[in-house]
Image 1 (cartoon, rainbow, N blue to C red):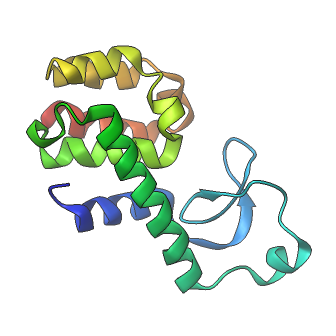
Image 2: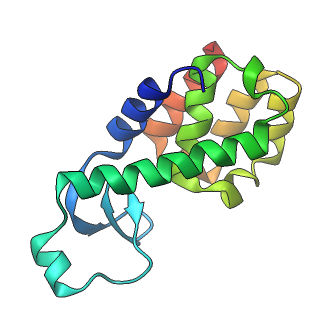
Length: 146
């Protein structure tokens, strides 16, 4: 990735840090920098939360997975994509996961063709845009402008 520290900062700013479990917009238990929990957290975790160091560790693991997902989905053009577009894709992979990002068929096809204006339009034409409008709009703009 062309600028991993910038991507990490961007995702952290989008996610925010919460050291105690909370329910995300999809009503899933989440903690740290938007790390989804697999089940309802125990009362002790609800009460005490996690440390900032634990939040960083969870983030690092999820970021690594998101970056790997992008290499799998976009490896054929990854090195040709601008820094900001790479950041958008890693942010989307972090938030949505590879299985959902893979379903952006038209956006992914536009990226294959290096048609970033169309890729940006496909971000708008999604449930993702409706559910996380501000974040998705930032990503749309970065995808379009590069």
